[in-house]
Length: 256
Image 1 (spheres, rainbow, N blue to C red):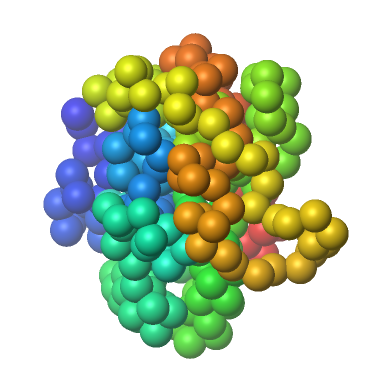
Image 2: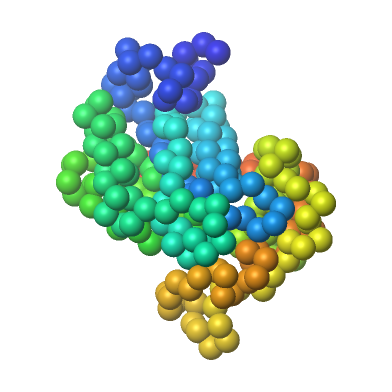
């Protein structure tokens, strides 16, 4: 692929990245988690989805003439609430913040002045927002942060049959994995891939945050119902996400 159409940091040379920085390119850093995703999905779901959304978003921006580059995914995050199932890697907040800050600091030292922390794991959401704000203050560059399904808002609802947005190992995530890496799905276990549609007990307000072990919430490890998933839905979700987020990141007022 010619350098001018490449969006992945790791596929560009140092000189090519220096040129992107000089052109005012945006750096998108996908952030995820390596964790259990029910009986039917491999543990790398969040890595696959966050990377795909980031890269598809970047390609849309580049096609519109906006310089951009995507780093490799930060593959581990805050997943203590999944540890009881096994198959999960987690960091504490200090380590997580240090990793993200190290990557952002490196981008700033390379001359980039705008960074988007694009999160793909619910357990990271509040932490990524805090770390992004600290990076902006410490490094003197513009840093935005957001979780991809929060950025999409209601955009996923028309695509899905049994939920309105991303839950966990659910119709949405399973569909996206079917589209991206079908061998990471265990079709013979799909009938077991169902659980409650919320992690909140009755009476807990949506605005109140309290993490609980998923083992206490859902014996299957699933929140939602993956049995309605399809690759076609997955492709539609990825396209909706990249289209919306590219439009949002192209807004010059965001970076002013």
